[in-house]
Image (cartoon, rainbow, N blue to C red; front, side, top):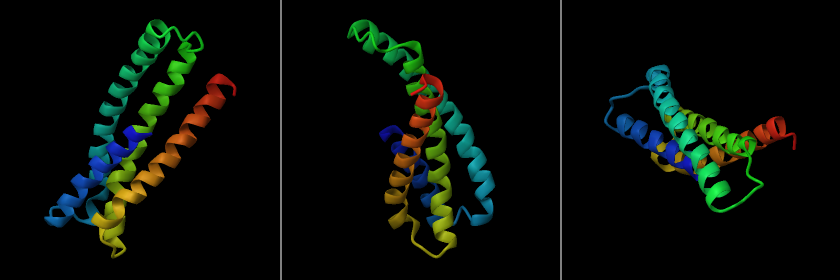
Length: 135
């Protein structure tokens, strides 16, 4: 879950910086979302692949945890990848929406992003676990 929070915070900091320097306006939201989506796909796929290898190699082979299967590694990896994508989306849109509504994005972004992304990552994990593992 924390990886998603870090990704969302990174996106929000970039957007908040651009907002404070008047380099960005609410009308740019779709351009920002597209740019962050591209970055999110790259980060999400990379982190999911590394996570998959880590779960299989370290947890199963080196630590001898036989309960870790390909499906479990897949669920954890898919969850991480999707969480990163969702976190980047939340992180780039929330400051723009806050600014549009008249709130200070620097003050409100981080707590909301963390809370929203944590809740979303749990929902994604349980959704994948239920559908793939049949839990």
